[in-house]
Image (cartoon, rainbow, N blue to C red; front, side):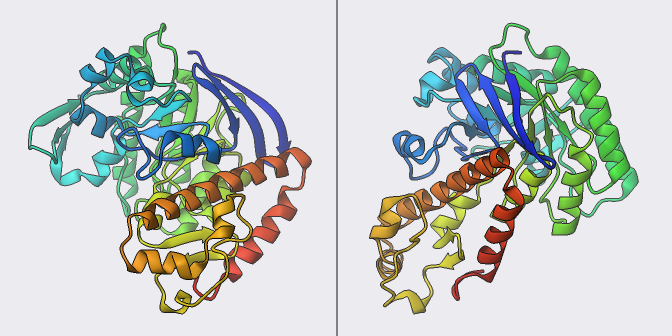
Length: 374
């Protein structure tokens, strides 16, 4: 597995690291913008690079449906196909096992999906998922897992975990030694500490290139999902990268960093942007609110993006109300830059040993919020 993780500094449980992949270096902790189909909605790769994105996430399920793994492999792999030359992580379809439950049938062998596009049947197994990601040439590949719903009885969570770890063993055996990237194991176990610890222990024995915390933000409350992070990270090996899947808010990211997470992803920056919700150090601004119609304040005077200081809140409000295509594009760029800048600040805080002070000040401002924030 051609991944190398270096632990450069710590501050409490927080880690400052460097993940070297076949397509570049990722300074951690890092946020991965979500490019489901191989691109982040509304943004060019140049804009992503200029914003500081060092790694992008793409979705194996959706790329399997279109254009298909054969096409991507024939055109030189996912980097050549998309034009993104920095590291790429692909998920496994495990989230779709949960989110598309009416359209799939699951067995010990794997999962059969009914395509939401044309109704055709697509089969995912631990082996086929690993093979597809290796064929595409991704830097970080995720094993196939079952993402259990919430609430769930402990007996059902244990049964689900047994299946996921069975798939993990098969995936680990199927991952080709000559593949350029690395395969991550995914820790499940819902909200049950003993199941999370068992999952972490068994996956560690399989010696994956890295480890992810899955099965969070599927309906459970903030206390449960943060507990899952806290009890899991302590059981993961220190010399391997750790990835928190699918979370979340800036406060979720801060909590994850404080407890030793290295990698994050979430659709929130782009999805919220399309609905006129803008992330700033002073909270989330709902720019469509009428009170911004005559507000000359820069959209975010604290952003490193010059256009956030050039454009007024009144102008952003006008663009959204007029349904101008520029509105969600600029808002997405603003939100992605906020997330990437925030992670850069957290990396610096760990390096300097000032993370606690930085976190206290950020939480104070962010939760106090703008009058139009949430």
